[in-house]
Length: 155
Image (cartoon, rainbow, N blue to C red; front, side, top):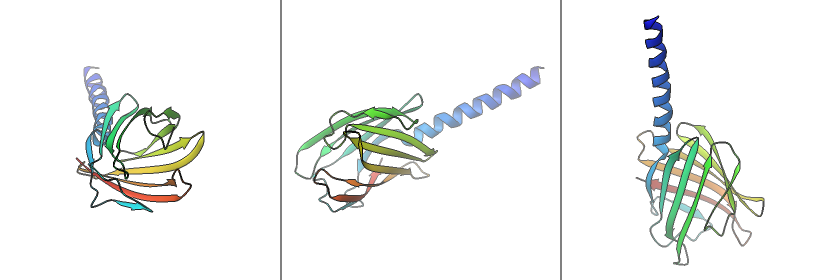
């Protein structure tokens, strides 16, 4: 009986640790590498852009700071669970809500909406070593022009 409890306890610990590790791949302070990123049709942001991701129960919390293409400072915040439901976004004029969906231990997707209408999707893939995050996004900007961006973040 004691042996069964030990084995059961060990299995529970291993599964718990693997879940915590998966969230840690996403978590951290990230800086956009403008040299490695591609903004179509452009223009690219002018200044350094940073993204902080914190793990929370069942999801992630995002804080983004930077300088946009016009040279103006930007700041936005939101959090969401991996349930695909819309969550309010504060400080981002391009979107009102964002929905988060986990694809696997190194990939998630975000669906952005403005006024209830989808304006873009982002797929974020994290490198195996946990040092790089590559986001590919498609959408429509405020002028109605289609966009296709690849943004590379580094820890």
